[in-house]
Image 1 (cartoon, helix red, strand yellow):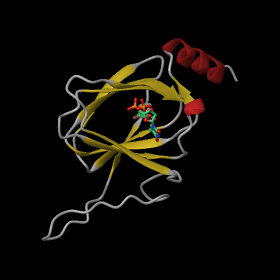
Image 2 (cartoon, protein in one colour):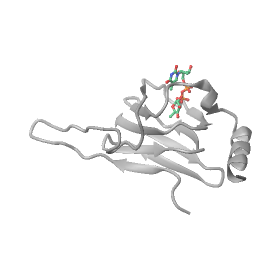
Image 3 (tube, rainbow, N blue to C red):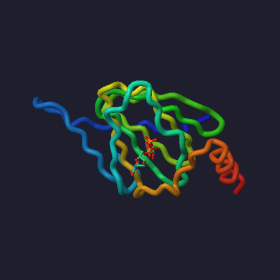
Length: 138
Ligand code: T46
């Protein structure tokens, strides 16, 4: 089975002063970026997420520290640790996501294709499976 998420490599514009990464819509971000949010100061042992999105596309980048994503497409669950600002996790389509094991210094930046809309969230796993079923029965 092909991966149901993508890791995007960001090119470092490095010089003697250090490193810089630029993320540009249509170049290394395959959607219009309408929103940026970041998660930081996450308390020890906290788990976040536990939802899927109906339409949203996102790229998550651990610009500092690390955290682990659990990704689930209804058939398969995979864990992926983000621990570098040079890679972004691209999630699109109906994917259940959970996040855990945040390091105390973790800053997780997320680029999103849409403005915040609670109606786009599926926050119950059963409803997620139902949405997948309806999606596949077209
Ligand atoms: C996702 C994962 C990776 C807003 O007001 N605006 C926003 O743009 C966002 C993202 C959240 N909020 C509010 C809604 C809640 O009252 O902030 C609070 C925390 O949001 P939530 O519990 O949804 O956070 P996470 O960490 O469980 O999930 C977030 C994103 O919501 C979600 O889209 O894919 O990060």
